[in-house]
Image (cartoon, rainbow, N blue to C red; front, side, top):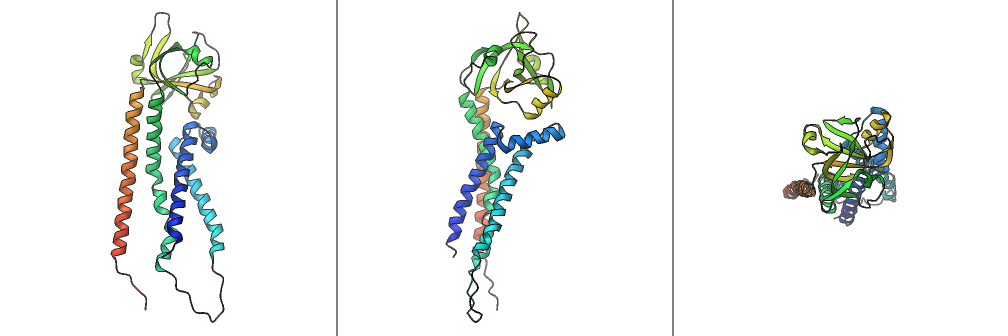
Length: 283
């Protein structure tokens, strides 16, 4: 028996949870190394891939952990004894200790899925009840919430962006708005006529969840087309409701838990099968 194995396993489990938590935080807040990598992709390619960016960060964590393990492994080497000293028996299960961290790395995937689901469910609980807002509410900075559910009224710009059939349309207080883009309406192209309700004064009302944060490649595309963009941009996602976020969040969390349970069952089966196998003792 190696008394350090359970301790190492607990440390690795905590490390994996911390790694996933930090990665999710950087992903949803568009900050830290995630933002650096996203903007680097935008600069080089003109767009960025969110999932790939998060995976690169996790891979970076694993490489750092591996490098630390390699550096510290030298301190664990035994001091050589006298030439005639008897050989010390090495427990057979010590060979499995270096691979003890592998199962925990595999659990990172369901943890990320469950974490995304938890974030979606949390957003669904924080959006609140339906409010009646105008574009000026977002431009003046009166909103203190991070996310709101509202009917938002304003004038849409004639210049907009399309990304995979999803439209990003700037919304202003006035019809000839020339201020930096602070509010954007996001709507599926096929649902635009249904989600955007025209008013008698030429303005548009859209119902959905508005939250802070515009994707890096979309912001870059606006600026590339000569449109000034504010540091903080709100996006009203047309047709999105708090109940939808809560349901989707629960489904994502359930998928994450199911994946973790499947991995645990497979690991337990392999462990039992290994213990049941006869040990071959060399002659």
